[in-house]
Length: 93
Image (cartoon, rainbow, N blue to C red; front, side):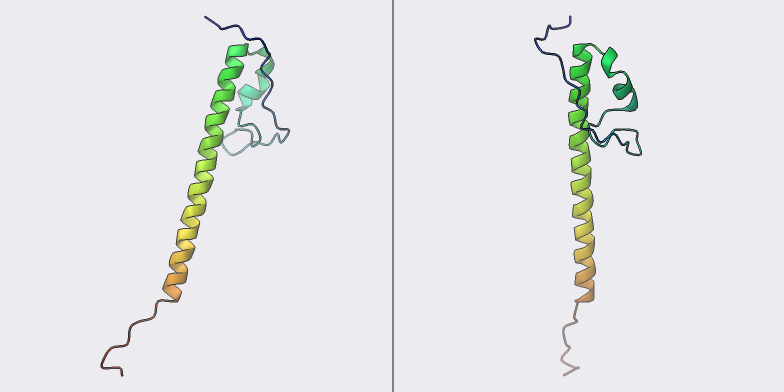
């Protein structure tokens, strides 16, 4: 049973309107179908889409965070390799 809502669910559109390679909007994280059918969705369906968009946004933020962390680790490993000095042996002195 659909719950009555007092306020209409506003569109999550941010006005960016560009899609990522998977087809999700870079601004609001809606799929193509969700964007095109927004006006025909019930209030419950709109709330569900907004919930899905929030999940997609969190996954995207985590992916970006993870990629940056991996990039920093690779850079640090590269720097450490370049600065890795060998300890002198007793025979070298």
